[in-house]
Image (cartoon, rainbow, N blue to C red):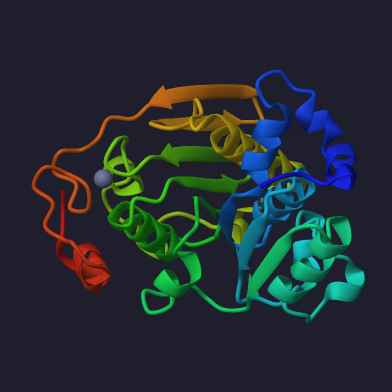
Length: 268
Ligand SMILES: [Zn+2]
């Protein structure tokens, strides 16, 4: 996919990078990336990937903007309150870069609509605030061989996990059981520093761009644990779990129809 002279100028600082060049920028332009959750993580990832020239972004969120979001969700302003995050984000991202296609989905991702929304993506970025979505997206991506970056934030901390299905540990290999609704506090209960969301989302965007250009990135097969209170960042190798019900040797489930069943019945 060739670049216009305007695009060569717009993306010149990418193109100057060793190993990126015009070819790398063309790869970015021909990529389709889906971003699930347009909150503290989805805001920086969507902004940076739009600015970088990802050819097609699919952005998914069912929420409307509220006042408590504005401390960290940098896609939105005070005037965005009560409007759909997906719709406001599409407008904002198009203002930033009108050379790319932004498809917005003002809906919660479910096992009934996930195929329609994510199919054809080259990479999926998960940054929602709930485990149900994280497990569902993991299962879909593993079953459909879509590379996935899952991120989470809480208080002063963040995590990013990179998954190449059937090659590296999946989210279920790493977190075998979905935590109960009350066992882990969320940002609404325990708080989160806005700038932490910015850093962790930016790490997700950086790893995404490296993957799109180079076909690999250091994050895959690893979990990056970031503790910004103590300013400690650790990269930990994750092993595949041979008993994982979705990607292990003895995997039992081959379709998303079983997705809820795994979480109700399966201890691994
Ligand atoms: Zn697995």
